[in-house]
Image (cartoon, rainbow, N blue to C red):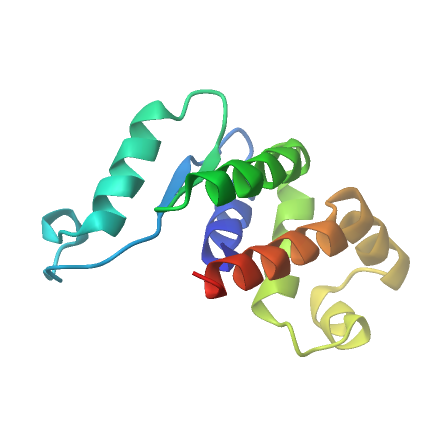
Length: 144
């Protein structure tokens, strides 16, 4: 999930671009050099979800349908925020996701922006809520 959010933040830095991502949880039976040649239930579930993505830009598919329903509802709500990221907000979110151990002051000094503008962008981008969603997702997937 963290990788998916980072990818989304990276793509959203370019005005007018977005990405659709389907996450399949399962086994990997064959690991080829090219991901398109790999096989297993994770790849099948990812493909199934990707083919049904329409308005939703991010979805999960595992072997536990009740958990999928709950996590996809949470992802759907988080997507309301992520889909509205401006390129500037996406850039700031991505930097913070890539530097989880640095504090806000350390990152601000690298960005040539004021502390207040960074803080406001994080708030507009729902950074704390997105982090909570990713942590919750990690706990639920870890329980599989």
